[in-house]
Structures are given as structure tokens and as C-alpha cells.
Amino acid sequence: MIYLSHFTLPSQGRRESLLERLVNNRTCYSNFYPFQVFDNWEEETFSFESITVLYGGNGSGKTTLLNLIGENLRLERRSVFNRSSFFGDFVDLCRAEGQAPAGSAVLTSDDVFDDLLDLRNLNQGIDRERTELLAEYKDLRESGFRMTSLDDYDQLKKVVRATGKKASGSAYVKESIGKNVRGRSNGETAFRYFTDQIKEDALYLLDEPENSLSVQRQRELAKFLEDSARFFGCQIILATHSPILLAMKGARVYDLDQRPIQVRKWTDLPAVRGWYEFFREHENEF
Image (cartoon, rainbow, N blue to C red; front, side):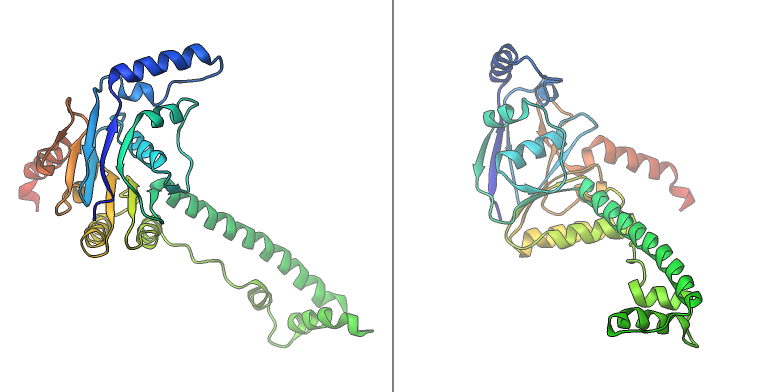
């Protein structure tokens, strides 16, 4: 499914003209982002397929391009991203052809790290409560508590749990708060995040989803994305370095390191060729 057919970045002349006006009218700014990212770019129009991959080295502009598309289409997103007071003005210069359905979103590896931090903070909170409950358990066993009114009933239940024949500190704590939330590995969390977030009939922008994923998990994610585009009405645009994701069936691959920007076979990309040569050199070791 194609929801976004084309996206056009402004020409160098339009960018320079706007930036000059903005700088003259503003006194407080720390940088010109994203204007400097595209210093050497002419007007560029990207044509999208059901799966389109943005490839390039650090600083090539692939993440910035995803952010511009996401802001232009007003897509949902969780994590904040690098932007300046000039970002919205640059977005207004861009042109998108198409419309994103409800539920479309920008999904990034930073979202996964946010989930991991939330889980860690939750478990740390539970650990602190466990320490407090163990101290309470000790006090209850030593208190010689006696019930004097119905108002003491909840306290009595605690004492019974804490002083029964089979009572133990761990049992008391476990009954009170349960076990820590089970934490998945970074890779499991990342894979589950992307597969849970991607629903039917929507446009998704993915920024380097391979972060934290093993080779096997990357292969599973690639198959999931292929199936989402082929069978479930999704359009996927992603930025990646991963040869496995670059090799997805039917994907259009843009090489942002080339001038002018080119659509290339994934097997011709320098990063992929580098891995190919590396494994050829070590072929006899397999």
C-alpha cells in the first residue's frame, strides 16, 4: 500500500533565501538545524514504495529526513528528537504527496530505550518497597501485637501473616507486592516493541530499528516488515545500516551518500560490500 507517494526537499536557493530572512529576524538561536544537514543538496524528490529504505553514513541526513517527513505529516511519535527554532520553518518548505492514515507513527530505537528505563525504574521502586516491607515484617514479629478493636483488623492480618508457623520474610514480601516485573533483554524488548506497535493499514517511519537486535532477530523483523507491507496494508519507510533490512524483498533503497542521491541495489552499497569482502577473506574458516 502506498500512502506517501513522494516527498520533496526544497532547493538550495529556497533554503538559503529562507535562512537569511530567519537569521535577520531572530536574535536567539543556537544552531540552524536542519539547514546545515542539506548544505550540498539540490532539490530532491523521493518516490516511495511499500517498503523504502534510506541508507547512508553518519551525518548523511537519513534520520533528519525521517523527522521532516514525520513532522510534515504530523505523525504520532513518542521520543523527542533533535530540533531547533528553525525546524518548523524548514518543514514548511517541504512538500508531501499523499496522506497518512490514522495510527501512522514514527518509531525509533530511542523508544525502546525509554521502555527499558521505565521497566528498570519500576523494578527499582519495587526493590525499595521490598526493603521497607522486610523491616515491617521484623517489627511485627517482635511487637507482641494485640487486637483491641475492629479498627485493628488490617493490622491483625499483617501480624498473622508475619508470625504464622510457615511465615517467612520472603513469603510476607511476596504476598504483599509480588515479584519484580520480568525484564526482557534489550533485543527482546526492541523486537517486541516494533512488532507490537505496527498495526494494519498505516504508514510507519522506522529509525534504525536494528539497534540491540541479534542477526536472528533482524531476520525475523525483516520478515515481519515484508509481511506487514505485503499482506496487511502497511507502508514502511526506514533508515538503517543493516544489510539484512536493506535486503528486504521489493524494497527501494536510496543511497544518501551519493550526489545526486541514487536508488541502488542493496548489494552495491559500500557497507554491504565491506561485509561481503570481510566474509570472503575468512571463507576458509567457515
